[in-house]
Length: 82
Image 1 (cartoon, rainbow, N blue to C red):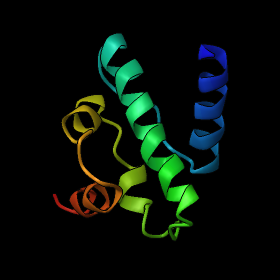
Image 2 (cartoon, one colour):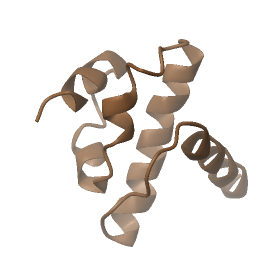
Image 3 (cartoon, one colour):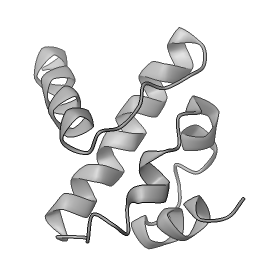
């Protein structure tokens, strides 16, 4: 199952041109799962890719972890804030 999730994560990261996460190994593993969940939901909802551009640039693992409980709409809005 973990191999499947890693492959899915790699496909999504490549498809959305998402940069590698920065943080500790544990943070990166956790944040990658969080990030993939959001991008998978965006894909399912057919969210406009331009809307996701600010979100795609978020490379801090801690940013994803700190915002894990937001809805897709909330995290997209937050990604546009400085």
